[in-house]
Amino acid sequence: MPDPGGGRTSLSDLSIGVRRALRHGRPWLHLSIETRFAATLERLLAGRPGRCIGVAVSGGSDSLALLTLAADWARAQPTPPEVQAITVDHGLRAESAEEAAWVAARAQDLGAAHVTLSWRGWDGQGNLQARARAARYRLMADWARAERPEISAILLGHTRDDLAETFLMRLARGSGVDGLSAMAETTRDQGIPFLRPLLAERRKALRDMLKARGLGWRDDPGNDDPRFDRVRMRQALDLLGPLGLTTDRLAETARQLARARTALEARCAETAARIATEPLPGVIALARPDFAATERETQLRLMAHGLSRLSSAPYRPRLKTLETALDDALAGRGATLHGGQVVATASHIFVVREHAAVAGLETPADGTALWDNRWQARGARLQGCTIRALGPDGASKIDRPATLPHAALTSYPGIWSGESLVAAPELWHAPLCQASYAPQARFHRTILSH
View 1 (cartoon, rainbow, N blue to C red):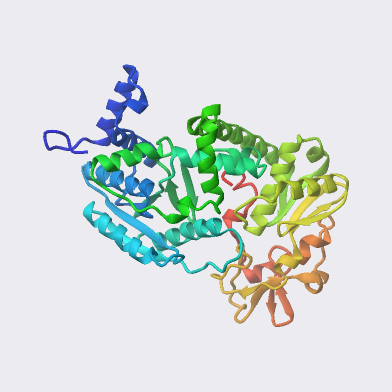
View 2 (spheres, rainbow, N blue to C red; view 1 turned 90 degrees about the vertical axis):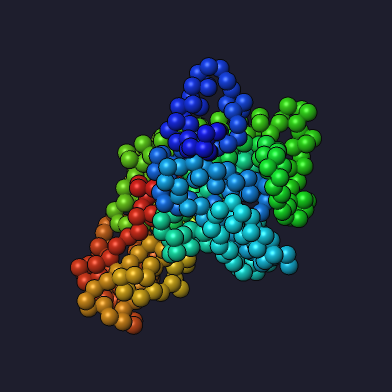
């Protein structure tokens, strides 16, 4: 932010000022919203702002306030980074293109670049808001990597109100600790950091700031449509507040649960290091006696993590289905769920990919194409070859290690030339295929971050 003398106030100076104000008893919320934002963003960026900062902007009050604050912050830097506004037009309403153009004009007023990305993927099936949200992240991450690799992070305008609304939505669905935990300030999608510097701010405060600056915003009519869960929860908060279930109280509860989730994840990772192995990439073996002696919450987390890594699913299996599968495994029975298969032997409980989930997948063995989002293979003698599951026929050609169940091989990748099996990673003629397994699919590597 420019200082009164026309110079610039560095973020290090600003951070010192914030700490000094807090030491002298000035509450955080008594600082200006611009000061709070700048101090939070400094912390999230860890002193590395880069040459460009992305800002997701829909045109609503939260995102427009975010863009305004980010533009202020950028101008205050000794070497101002570029601010890149990003709008996703979902094409779901006739006014969406005009609204995107309106955002572009506001971005120009604030000295920011702007781009509109289009999504036309809604087929009328499933949860519209969840599908649209996933599409936004994917589109922004893909665009940033391809067109603006200098972007160090993309800012998102989630607020304290969003924490409370999400808490109620997930409470109504019977979510556990993970679902009820506050969304993280920092996440990554396809290698792009997404930051939420407004999680401590109330929506009203952001709107008051915009009004004080003479700035307007565009409300999405969907924000008042009671067909959507979030809208109903927003309306419910007005009734719950007088009972003590205020936005601030619910948001703080979500933050406390986030701390509990961190502790549970650490316990899960420690247990995995002791009792879980991957005899082959994508084949997860849990030592059965040790697994059986582990507390149920950690058992569920270990199984859920393994299944999610194998299926590349962004969400865990449904709790009821997962608990049934766990009970079956502990009783020595198998289970199929979430694109995976659980197999119990005398010594281990295995979590492997379900053959039916990959039976129809086939990709070139060209070193670039990913089979099942996890495997690549290349080799001088693999021209024209493809990767597909071994299946029963391919598995029958391989001397199966005595410790592995048959199901671990049928869903395992093979390198095929037509109907002839050429190789299988780490199992059969492995040097021919020079296979690699995606790091994000590895069980141990991702257990804390997933």
